[in-house]
Structures are given as C-alpha cells and as structure tokens.
Image 1 (cartoon, one colour):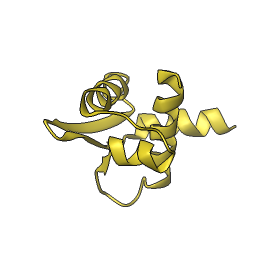
Image 2 (cartoon, one colour):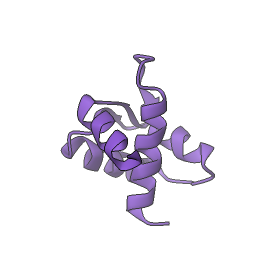
Image 3 (cartoon, helix red, strand yellow):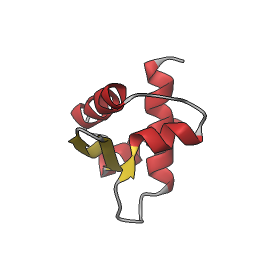
Length: 81
C-alpha cells in the first residue's frame, strides 16, 4: 500500500471525527482499515501531514496522535467535490 493511500485514510478518518475535539492514534486509525504500521512509520506519516498543515500531531515514543486542522478539512472537502 502506498504512503499516499495511508495519508488519505488518516485524513478521511480524522475528518469524520473533526468536531470531537480529541487526538486520535495514527496506528489505531490504520489498524481499523486493516493496515499494520509500526511506531516509526506512524510518526513519519504524522510528520508529513503536519508539514502540509492538514493535522496537528502529538508525536511520542509510543506513536503519533492527531486531529485535523481547518486546512485538512478543506482538503478533504475539495477532494469529495
């Protein structure tokens, strides 16, 4: 599976939770889709999305958690139209 597909899954999930105010584990988001990633990959994916301005991330030794930003919401809504 490509990195782009993983990034899209993460953003789509975070978009579905955009008003809950919480951080969500990148590893758990991808596990829901049947995709296994390790902590290092989780952190790298979070850094990529944060660099693009689509999420705010908390990256620790245990993995990354994130919530979607308004830029991320705009990106997903533009993809869907």
